[in-house]
Image (cartoon, rainbow, N blue to C red):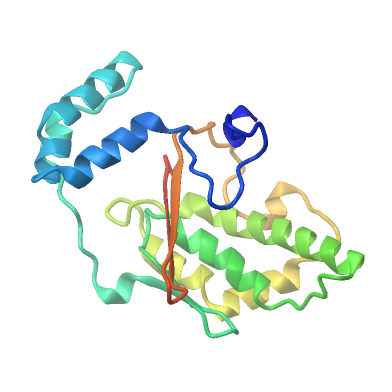
Length: 217
């Protein structure tokens, strides 16, 4: 819990407080922002060398060649995953192996419900529906691998973000919980993963972008 407390006030961080717990990440991002050639610094320079050294120290397999040979993959517009919500908002994200489709699927399912958030019963329903929606959406994660190696991954991503799939899930959600096999997906428990980083940015027009970098097992 310590990382959530402002060391100056001794209380949890409030709106407007500066959070300085990720100082190493801060220095890295500041260095890249001020660099005249950030791509070279990150993929070919001392920064890549230092990261590879740390990876090897902790049993990782990435090499300096992996960094220097990395190339971004541009996907066509047709493969971008979109979800249209009732209030006119549009959520979009990259195709697999990104997990964007899973998050969109959950929001798409929840978009079909109505709640009175002043009602205790509806608040309980909201949380129950969110948990159950997450179970169905996360059950599809095992099929959302890299399209270069996982058959139909992009098609599945588009399917689980469709209105038809959301309606089907809502028809399966009851007031009770169910065994794992009820939700589909793999019956094998994934190994614990670590190293997730998230950033969210909202502009003055209300457009929001959120990015989570994680080991998507």
